[in-house]
Image (cartoon, rainbow, N blue to C red; front, side):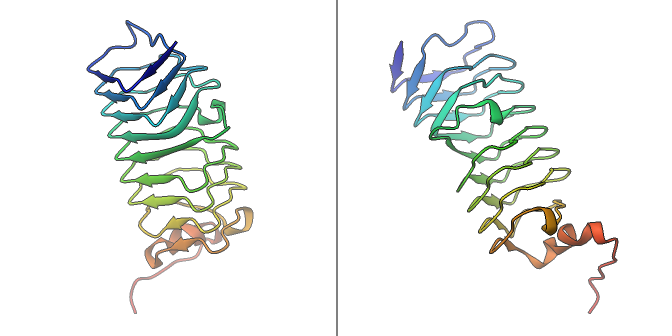
Length: 190
């Protein structure tokens, strides 16, 4: 079944699961998805606003041109998604403990989001933007961050030697996160 141009507001999908296999140009507002399986479902040009998507199952789920705003998304495994055409953005979301292992997230925009303890191991974040994002405890290992913008991101720690960061953009205040593993002291005094 295919659903197009619908607004789903204040729905509890833990009680009444989604019935369609594909949703296009749909808006999900203040909906409850906690622990629900979205496996195999296709979302195209959809928005999720103020939704609880914690621990949602994403096996072969498709997200093409999908925007998440003010959503709580703890513990999701984005590497389980169908990677063909995978394109989404996050604004003011909580993405703590999410896994993006080996996911291709070129040009993905993360804005005003908490992405603490997330796993970006072997992820392709080329041209990604982390605008005012808290990356405390996030793992970057063999991650492609070429031309990524982390100028306003904070609390990140990453080793340049084990990540590809060519032409990535960092603020002076974020350099401590790139140098922490050297066990040196950085003093703000001039």
